[in-house]
Amino acid sequence: MKFIDEYREGEAAQRYARMIHRLAKREWTIMEVCGGQTHSIVKFGIDELLPKQITLVHGPGCPVCVTPLELIEKAIEIASRPGVIFCSFGDMLRVPGNSKDLLSVKAEGGDVRIVYSPLDALRLARENPERQVVFFAVGFETTAPANAMAVFQAHQQQVKNFSILVSHVLVPPAMEAILSSASNRVQGFLAAGHVCTVMGYEEYEPIAKKYHVPIVVTGFEPLDILQGIYMCIRQLEEGRAEVENQYRRAVQRPGNTVAQNLIQKVFRVVHRKWRGVGQINHSGLGLQDLFADFDAERRFGVADQTFEESPECISGLVLQGVKKPFECSAFGSRCTPEHPLGATMVSSEGACAAYYRYRRIRPEESSIPRQKVEAHEA
Amino acid sequence: MCLAVPGKILSIEGSDPLLRSGKVDFSGIVKVINLAYVPEAQVGDYVLVHVGFAINTIDEGEARQVFEYLRQMGELAELEENGEKEVK
Image 1: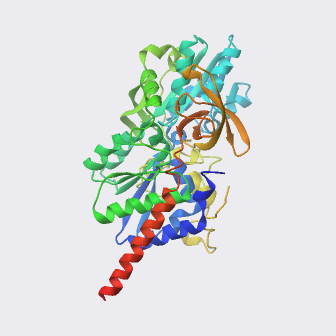
Image 2: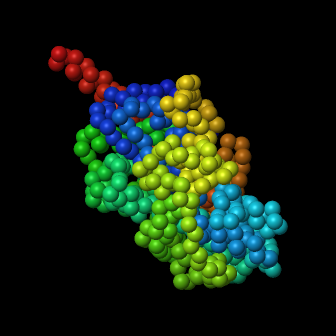
Image 3: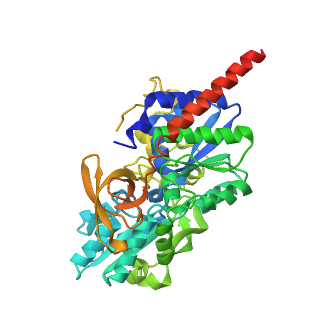
């Protein structure tokens, strides 16, 4: 596939790896922010191509993982109501709430549907005027233009039986929360490429300066990630802390301003709770007053409840790059993708689930060398 | 979740900028995609698609830079190594 296959070329990956070996003189810890990047790194064994003085830690950029239990419970409550068609991206359905998941609601007779796009949910609302159609609007900045458009069109077309349950989070405040924590060990970031496709990267420049940390906007294919790591280490070795753009084919500094305009029309910045991390101020999006009628929480009057996470789960520390999945005693035994204890095991983009899928045994127990970067792996 | 897939625009329809959409080919799978956020995109362009929306046009001129950077940095590293040898 054009613009994918060429960035998985094994020989170029090996050359980048050799260049990184030559470049890295000291120990550095780099965080990839996005769960899609984590998934690529573990799947292609990119971390295993790096010299041992380079540690990659996995960031909080998995919106499915960080959606708080309270919102999952609200989704379950709304989806269980008669007359509701509850629409969601597929990966939210297996995320356990306090009691059950959305898939069990479906099994019990609830009308829960997987959609590809929020516009599919809006179409369902137009086709079923006697039903309430709710879309579970989960995501980072990348998904905000799509959800903003669905609400904006619903408003324009006066589709009154459509609403969204908003769980939108923003990347830069989470990066700042990690950097300002006393236990922080992150010295450089690979910023999430597609978030920057939408938002650009101007807002990362003050963060790089304030915390003296290099930030490299990075894509998702193996060669993108290797180049991003190379650029980040180069800055670290030279003592620089700038925002650089590895993913130039898809990201420009101002971002997509047409999309940003609609996001600002429909959404405003609010405080959000992150599963495994806790509340981060100004770290999410909620609907503007003009669009408040489309807020499912308001329409269905679901009450706020607070739930406790499993005390055994260390996902908060994994999400902040303080611990690795292997350092958890429940990993792979009491906590698996089928029965997750917490945030980082619930989605395939969570660090724990990625390790479980591609690396079930601890590195020291492995006697078989893992397959390295493959040229045309699907 | 933030997965976005590159595809080639086959056709464009709709005069309302908000409803502008088009058929986009993902290596044989063709889907109707909202093009409101890429007003500059034309038939034949590659766009990056996330949950039914094109979020940017792929800059073909920049698409080779990952290889160009590798070549430049590789040459630089060789120059430095040769330089070190000469000093010795």
